[in-house]
Image (cartoon, rainbow, N blue to C red):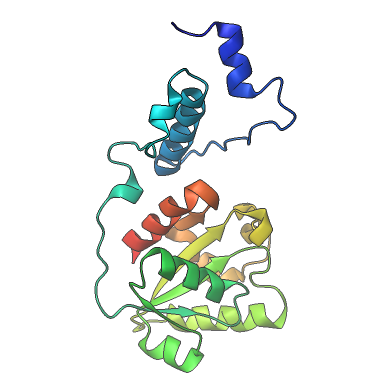
Length: 208
């Protein structure tokens, strides 16, 4: 028999438990929305009789992005600038999520001459101080006519990792010449932690 509405509500929201459930974020991007829906469904299932059977395997959404079989082209080299705080760590995290599908360099001489991609990590420290000025110069070189390197932008959303609102990059922080030259014409891929991280990895993988 189905549980009563009151009992089901109490089970889902843990009205009588000392520790409330974690709030599930809702995202406007479809691939992240699928994760939100899956997490919501899991919580409902956990509040229903017989949920032990469900616990035998993880829930999934048919066709969700992290379940797609993706393969990267060989020879990918990603430049993570030492003038872009946190870029190397994020590049390494993304590489691990893609099972080592690309190499990472922090050497400007190598990165700006032979790298296939320039990882621009947008967080609350990007473009600040002298390092920010050097980063801007590197971006100008990467985007100059004749350059073969492609800039891939990733936007940090986890506050614990320097996440910020994307709007701050339009309040004078980004050098005006880069902004007017169309730096942000291309999509910046959102980085979300926890259950949403596999989607972030897959979106960047498809961009690579």
